[in-house]
Length: 427
Image 1: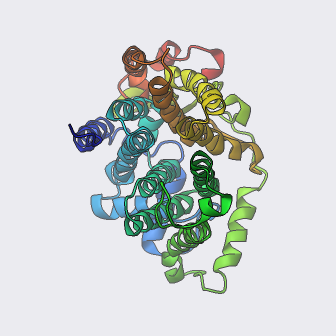
Image 2 (image 1 turned 180 degrees about the horizontal axis):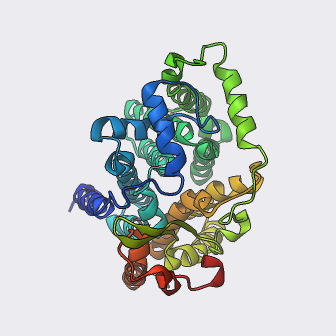
Image 3 (image 1 turned 180 degrees about the vertical axis):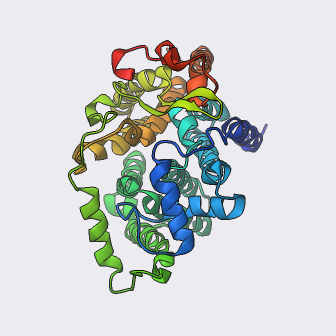
């Protein structure tokens, strides 16, 4: 009897079709820019015209993708948002791939992907022209590529997949700087797993960091792997600034490319006026202040778009993270440790980052990590096993309840928001 792991491709294809269909349905409503599209759509237009620097507090890559949508599909809501739907589908498939590569089982991978698909944060960010959707997609897919390299059987395959992961992570940072710590997280994960392999096999630390005889990432020594990860990701990041060299006003040069990064940092850390939807980092996991991206009469009806996480995922996911952390200490389990650490790494950056005000959408990447932690926890803890179906049913019901204000569907009237604002701070 063959003991080969089942192929995940059919499940991945079905998930991709489901995600892309769900994200694309009635995508063009509202037809006017909403929330931060008012910043990034004009910035994309300026990029298309190569007129000069604008919205310089963020890198160019995500705005270049929005500009590509405008170029290919027109300067309409379809053009602004189409590539965001692909990014959302990429997030769903990336979660599937990460769980599959961590556990080697299709069932938990499917559940993790479905948790992501029906998480309100992913759905809303997949249908708006903002930076965070692209940042998260390239980050999740980059981490999946590095795990794919870990599972390689030949050194050549491991290196090519590792380089792919480095490129994707560099592009993630080129969409938004918040992804930068994940590159360090990946490097720490490489070293930690190599040391764990050495402990289990009785090898020395030197042997763990060397290239030969490795269970994970074959023929990859630690120092060259770190250099390639850093060098390739930085190169990919700076390559995305190429259009700025052709601005008709104040173009970049090789001499000003690095000083421009300081200008970006200075703009990022400027004091900002208070905002009605601002919130502190400590409040995001319990979702004290979700954000109304839209609430007005538009396109012939009262409509709303509320950036809100699925309550089962955001609150249940915290229990899953704690369980994974506990299990990692108790059992010395790398998958449990990775599942918990990914949430910590993607969330902790906002505790130390020098931003003057915060918003719930900064929690987007950690909200995706919760889906991975839930899938791993349901698979690895006997008390939770086979309860994933009932939990998914709750997730889908909650998604259906909030769907009208996730999708800008027509609402009964201006006071309809009371139905979905279950707590006073949600208004």
